[in-house]
Amino acid sequence: MRYAVVTDIHGNTTGLRAVLARVRDQHVHQVVCLGDVFECHVGKRDVAGHTFSRVDEVFDQDPELVALLDGARVVRGNQEERISTLVPGPARPAWARPVLDAPLSFHTDFATYCHGHALPSWQEPEPGLWCPLEAGFTGRALFHGHHHRSAVHRLPATGRAWADVVSIPLRLGEAVHLAPDGRYLVNVGPVRGPVPTWAVVDEVEATVTYYRIEAPG
Image 1 (tube, helix red, strand yellow):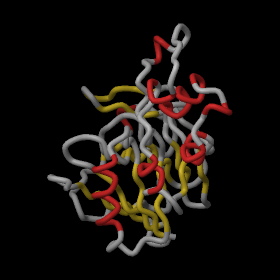
Image 2: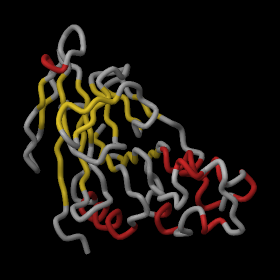
Image 3: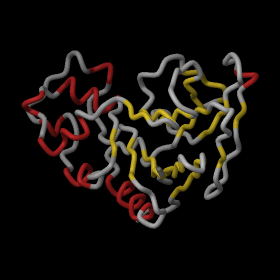
């Protein structure tokens, strides 16, 4: 299978629309979305004491955002989990339920796909770059989002010491080959932001290729 993987949209309908327009020409079988489709207006520290009179006080009511992902395989992120905590089931808009009720992960023989917020032991090997070094996963690679920075790390054959982890250089449009004897942590990078980013994963060729849009429109 060949997937286009997007994540961390955070309500950026314009960015997602622009990314998917380019994905149409990349001959993928399916889009995989790794969560944080919505942006919750309530911070995680304010959930317990929050009350609201309208659902749009919790997150923006934009059905197009979900419609754009029709046919995609979606997993939920921490934004969706926070919204679900705040908005009881009957009050959730029907159009939003495919995202709010999505599973936490998606697995193939080749890889595990998830948002990443539930993974343990995030570490910061360099400023601004966070990596779930201790995460367990099935397959050759773990594809995740959550921390908004594109990166590919090859794990050592034994142990998880950072000194033995290899950071693989990334060049836009150039495939990174994931060796059959390797195990990889792959941070896709966000749709939200000035340069929406996504990755194409070819599970047959065992490659991941990064793309981004400098000026979405």
